[in-house]
Amino acid sequence: MKRAAWIVIADSDRARILKVQQLGILIQVDCLHDPLGRFKEQDLTSDRSGKGHSKAMTSKHMEPTTYPHQKELLAFAKRLSSYLEKARQAKAYMNLYLAAEPRLLGILRQQLCPATKEILKGEFAKNLANEPLEMIWQQLPLVV
Image 1 (cartoon, rainbow, N blue to C red):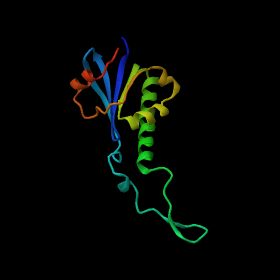
Image 2 (spheres, rainbow, N blue to C red):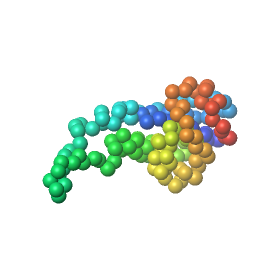
Image 3 (cartoon, helix red, strand yellow):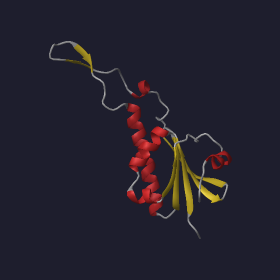
């Protein structure tokens, strides 16, 4: 039996793992959630920025070098990448396609291991996470 192609449809808080059953027909294999992905930046921090003093003893706000939402996207991308790697090792799919919101797609691409990148056949910077399965197939130019 031929191993399937998988399509990952993701946004900041959800990744739908879809399998191409046959041309034009998708079935959902799994769904990963990141409950913090939809929070606003200020909701991800527990309190206001700390205050520090410069040499002149004037008060300055110290800003974090990495924003909490970026950290959350990175953590979600790592989790998704790990899931895809384990499934690849289990030979669950042969070809991989990614369709994600642009910020997540860039981070996810960096997190994929080299072996998974080798079977990545297409990337689409589109947020299709809330689309029905029938519409997803129509919006992606896939060669499966």
